[in-house]
Image (cartoon, rainbow, N blue to C red; front, side):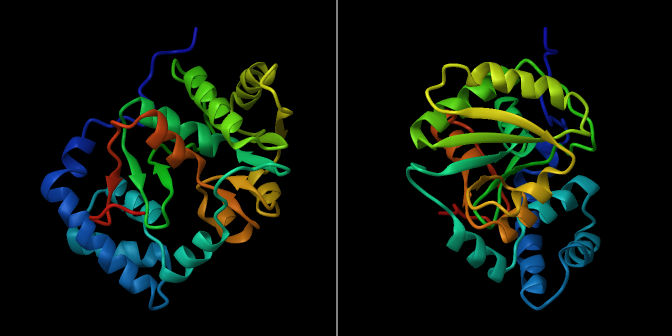
Length: 240
């Protein structure tokens, strides 16, 4: 039986991402975005503002994941695909769609980012294990896929990540009888395969910038299936 785990839950998040701390993060994100728009690299910009506000490593990681330049935001929004996926193959960035949903179901921090995506703070680091929420996540994913009606759905998983084979088996189990062709494939480097595709479900910034088109699947599922969930929004406003 999968272990009962709160994916990505860190008790200090209640202190570091709420109240005065959240207001400081929102100010810092505005500063970091200002620097990005003037040519600074993301890590350098976050290091600069992080030192100023004396943020923790986790708060800095949140800024890195949530902050984008105006150019990147415009590029990603231009390529976002909405509505039916009829006659399209949807390529799903496996861990990148599963883990944020596990985190949301765990009541952990999920960021509502400047580019409109939902990103977690879990950090994969080459290690993954199935938890008690994984099957529910897969059920939510396949329900969403049924609504989007792609011609074909392909979950792409990084083979070097531990337990990727077990996750692929669970995906294949859900794919049986789902009403459309769906599969899971293990590859040495998922990013390198996905950034050449025209219809990708991911929140990975590099893939978003390089792929032909993308679907904001995780955010859509969280807002539809978990309407009471509260994103952590470092912009200080609701992102449309």
